[in-house]
Image (cartoon, rainbow, N blue to C red):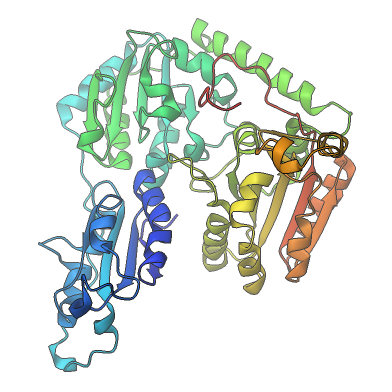
Length: 511
C-alpha cells in the first residue's frame, strides 16, 4: 500500500516463531517487511537460555536475508548494511520481500559511548529498470499479430503504480484485460474491457497473453492446458529475472519495472497506427460468456428464499459500498465469490489471503488499511469481508479496532462452517444421541454464533441479520456512523455454494 517496508517488533523464541507465518506471507506475496526480534543473550547460547531458539537460521527460510549485528555499534549498519546489503534496501529493491534483524538481549541494556554510534541515512528509492528495446519491439509485434489477445494484471502492477500506463494500453488498443485478485482496481472493475466475468473462457482460448506482474502459479493454473491453449504465447513483464520462464517458456520476456516497461510498450505500439478490432469474433465470444455468467449470478442474487445465499449478500453489499473504500477479504467461498461481485475502482484497494492463501490475515490487513486511510484520506472506510471460519483465526483483533476507533466495518458471512455447515435443527438432531465430538464433522461450526457480540463487548456496534432488508439497513447505518467500528453478522444458507464452474478453481481436495 505504501511501497515502504512494514516494521514488526517481536520478543524472542515463541514471539519470533509466531511471526514466521506473517514473514512467510509477506515474502511469498512480495511485500517489503522488516522484522526485528529480541533473542537470548550471546554468552548464554547453547546453555538452554530463556526462550533460546536459532532465530537467524530459522528466518533464512522466509526472508531475503537474516542477520544479527556483531555489536551494538553495528546495529545501524545491520539495518542498512549486512555484507554490503541493506535491510531496508533489500526489502524494497528488486522483488520486495521480508528481512530479519536479530537483537540479542544483552544489547538492550548495554551502555556504549554515544559518539561511537554512526547513524545511517535511509536508502534511496529503488532504481527504475527498463526492458531491452529489442524485446519491447518483439512484444509489440506479437501483440499486434494476436487474434485473441488478453492482458492479465497482477498485484505486481498495482505495487509498481502502473495503473496510468496499463489503462492507456487497454483503452487505446481496445484490449481485453483480466485482473488477478489483488490486481483488481489497477483498471476499474467496471471498465467495459474487463472480462473478469468470463475468466475461464478468456484464459482457455487466448492466443497471446501479456502478464503484468502476475506469476504463472496456482492462481493462474501454471499457464498449462487444459486451462490454456497448448500454443498460447506468453509475454512476461516482471521485476524479477528468476520469475521469467517459470512453468511455461514465454514468447517474450520484459525484465524491468512494470510501470516503466508498460510505458515502453505504449511508446512502441504508438509508432504504428493499430488497435484490436472491438467487434472481433474474440470480443463477441467474451461478451456472450460475460453476459451469461452475469445473468446466472443475478439469478442467484435475486432469490427470495431464506436463509440468504452468497450472491444475494454480495449484491446487496455492492449496492452500498463507497467507490473509494478498501476491501479486505478472506475465507473460502466468501472470498472467492465476493471477489467476483464486489467491485474495486482504485488500485491497491483490495487485500486478501493472497498467493500463500493465508487465513487469519483479514483483521490485521484491515487495521493496516485503516491506518493508511486515516493518514491519507480521513473519512475513507475499510470494509472487511470475512467468512465465519476465517474470522475465528483473528477475531480478537476487534479489540484493537475498537481501542483505536478505526474506520472499519466487518462483515462476517456466516454459514456455520468451513465451505458448508449445519443448520440448528441438523445440529441438534446429529448430536441428540451421541457426543458432538464423535458425530459433528470438524468443518461444522456452532450454528448461529453471535459474532457481533464480540464487537459490542468492546464498545463497537454489532448487528445480527437474516434478511436482505436487515442487511441493507445495518450496512446503511454502519456507513453513516463514522464514530464507531461495526460488525454485521450475516446469516446465510449453511449449504450455500458457488454457481457451477467450468473448472475446479483451486484444489480438488476440499470436501
